[in-house]
Image 1 (spheres, rainbow, N blue to C red):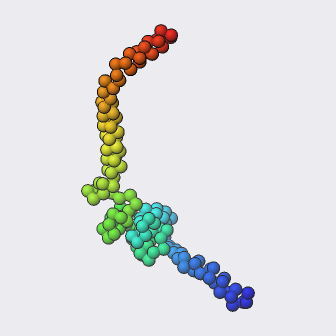
Image 2 (cartoon, rainbow, N blue to C red; image 1 turned 90 degrees about the vertical axis):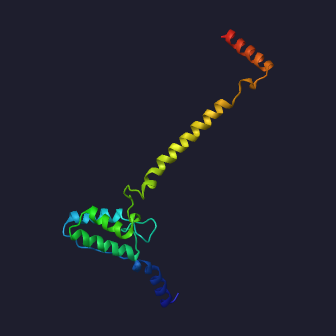
Image 3 (cartoon, rainbow, N blue to C red; image 1 turned 180 degrees about the vertical axis):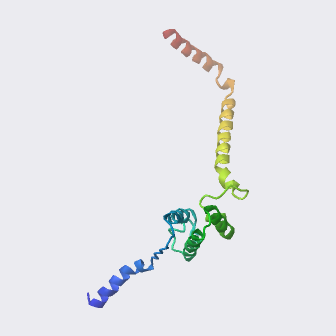
Length: 156
């Protein structure tokens, strides 16, 4: 392999590393840095379907991380930051959306589905119990069954 080909292969192998963005923010206290880490893990990237802004490389996630840093340094509380993000991007930006009329289905659906399933099981078991008629056995079968049951009772 000649030298230029080897250089090309090495650059090709290393190129994905150059695309990774490493952001470093200066925090005025370690408490703010801890809050930044926590908040960036709790906020969902609006572009990525299931990534938080800490893990996403999307440009919007980079902007949100920068905005989060600025708001933390400005003294905003976690609730104020969440409220700002929700007002700008909607409840989707939160991994744990708040309970409201719009998100009631998300919070109540599991309980409602469980109750519906329990009702279906209960009703089907009740119907199954009622569907067996007393005259399912013929008279000859009933006498034979009584004879068999009688023999086992005498033997015990």
